[in-house]
Image (cartoon, rainbow, N blue to C red; front, side, top):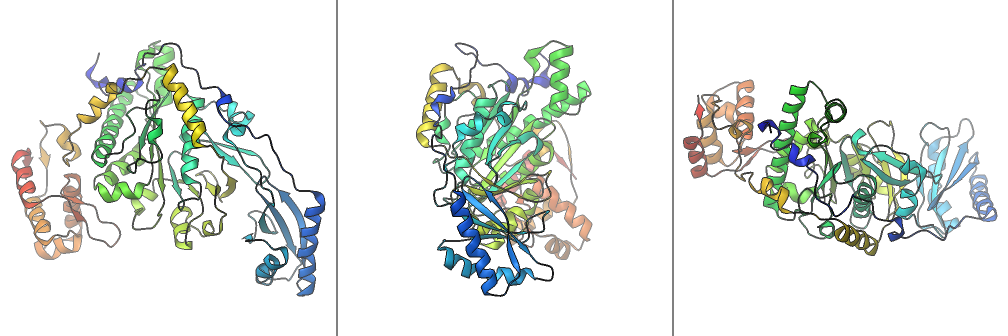
Length: 506
């Protein structure tokens, strides 16, 4: 076998099973046997109360339409010509008082409409179970192996998405908002949609709380990663795998994984060289970035170049603030999902606009894929821990999974911070003549910034910026985040040893 396939084909290698993979039966999931609907009498009663309040306060507006969903109902308010939206929004608290409801979410105006939306939770909201989505025609008719169940919209329509079209996803929400439940829905959707030869999962959960239950399922590329040191190795392995796949695509003159698999599988009739798609799911990305400095660099590379080779990323954060999510990562994760967040600024970090702070807890979210111009209001599905455990036990009993097959390749990746060019020990690194002096300087000052290099070395901005990039690539510092200086990742002794052992010419 050609050496260029060393790391690629192992991802597409077929595992040994007792029999051909079959998705777990849907009977393992709970089915919704109770569907509650609002009566016409109740809807008319609420609409009359809202209309009477408008008349009492002298506001020329009325309830124009009512949309009933499984969890909440939206009353569309139509203002008369000349009526300001502010006059209607000023009555929200009075409407809550007279309807005796906890909260009203206002959409002013509803996108692409001339009405204002008042969303009120139903007295007896219906629970949306994952099985309802997986059994739906919208999910079963999807051909993509990366199809995931998102939830149901205001009209009760099943919303199914394709991760390969996103191509990366950023999820935000406070604890208890339904964020972790949605991640379970993603994983279970992949289990029911794709066999292990088509999609491999890399699950990272340093808190060892949510994702450890999936250890032993055949879709896992590695056992669930809970050690921060192994996180860096796994992401570095993924970057190395990505570069190897690009080399193969270049030799076959194709530009994406689907074209390559079609060429190899159909024309050359060689299924042993088919490449699977990789889905990297990271729970609480904020913890990863704080514990491991190199994670951001590898995640950025994967987000920028991973789509064409079939590598996709799903990141979640319980604290979506600018400090935890740099602009470099956000700009490459174009599809967003925001559950309830604490503040308006947190909503702007995820969605680039306010509104998520007003969402209801427990599954209410804004779904903002890259191909839409405004967020879609969706309620995610519920799946219990007992259901997850039943599915995992079924897969463990009906498939054989070897953890050592891929762990060896992950563990062999060195943990020491190295540049991309150091992966090839025979190559010569061309660096700026001021590289060694700049490295010693930033370690001595315990901070790294372009301005400091300009002042101390008496050089221009462009040259100082190039030296900072070289220091970042070689793992000496972590790149600047906004106005914050770069973080030092090496000691003086480690840097001197790096200079001596590396094949560097100035």
